[in-house]
Length: 346
Length: 244
Image 1 (cartoon, rainbow over the protein chains, first blue to last red):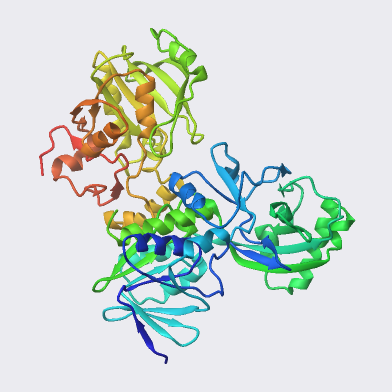
Image 2: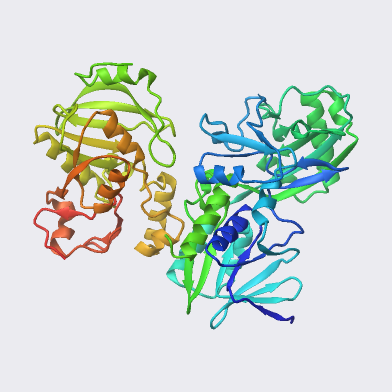
């Protein structure tokens, strides 16, 4: 048993993805410092950028889009990064995009030359975030929630906001002993939502390969690929042509527990079929398994959940699945909304 | 383009090049795309179809009499409810409310019903059916409906405001029991000269309202014990109903 951290602010947010950051920022505007616990070693969740020999590669969200005026203002507020307005401009293929509304006439799209993680990094400025901290259990105590972490630390807070993927949120909520009607309803609702996996391969090619004439391709005749992203098109200086291959939910599900070397090979074979043999021989590859890739947008609820427990304890559930249409915009709106609910503004 | 508007059809010509700044935070803009006669079992109306720049939902206005440039037009905003309006569901009173509003404008010289395609209080059909699913298990309450991820009434009346403006209606008498609706429309620049209570006639399905006093807003349980959602964000008032 480790030490007990008690915070005067009394709000803990689980997850430093777009939802958690948006929630913490909105609370901070109201003068409240929440503690954000993040299992990974960086912020942003699926709004993620890797660096390969210094060159950024977006391997989660490949671009940001939205139409909500406040969300767009938040994107415009990102400092120290070069926005690429309108990216992706060149589309190919008649396959269905992950979010077809991304290409609606009134939707704005953009990426950042430094990588999409510029957005979460900007949101995280001045927030209190503890990285490498995975919450393993949530217990409703006499007057506070107790959170156990993998490292053995216990945290206490009267208000907890869970912004983890639905599957993990479900586990935390399942373990709560409270059997109120509301909690039963919440469990039922969480069972109606699911997150689709997405196997992803990043591939770096020499600069002299035939350059695909698109920013993003949604192939219509591939059972494996959801999309191919021409990532190096986003970079001012490039050492490699980088392509990011993201796979369909079913294809990903079937290979989720396999050795990444196996499915990486399958992905390169498919790339070769679609692009030419050069695509089967990259200089390097990196595999990423998004176990919880994205919420199937039709299954999303429409607003975050705030439940009352015992005396003055509140449990908030927010995330991409708790706002219409899914995606980073939904996550951001959901985080802000749960903060406003906590503040009693709505 | 300067077009003299003497008939509803002239609105189509006027809107050919229409490109305004939009109404509300999402800058909603609508255009009149089609106008036709609409004989109904409630009376003979005209129907005006709108396009909007935000989504693929095609909203319509149902019109009685001459409303072009008119003041104090009795107006009802009705939100689409597939289960109630079309299928005749008794889990809500949408059909009663829609029929009452059409009958009412038919009895007047002029009137307007805006049929807004915002299903399930704006939460969509899938989530509305999920709310019913919770109710079937006895899990729904007013609070739960809000807390459980279904938006409270958050419909955006910016579209309705623009539609009223497009029809060149100068001011309306809003048929509603919900003062918040008046406030929202006013914020979007609609001149609401007065509020008309929306009273629905008694029938076998709303007997509950007559027998007991009104339940909390948003949710009611009928005399057979079945929980209902109130889809129209209006407290229901049935003719002959006792006040709280």
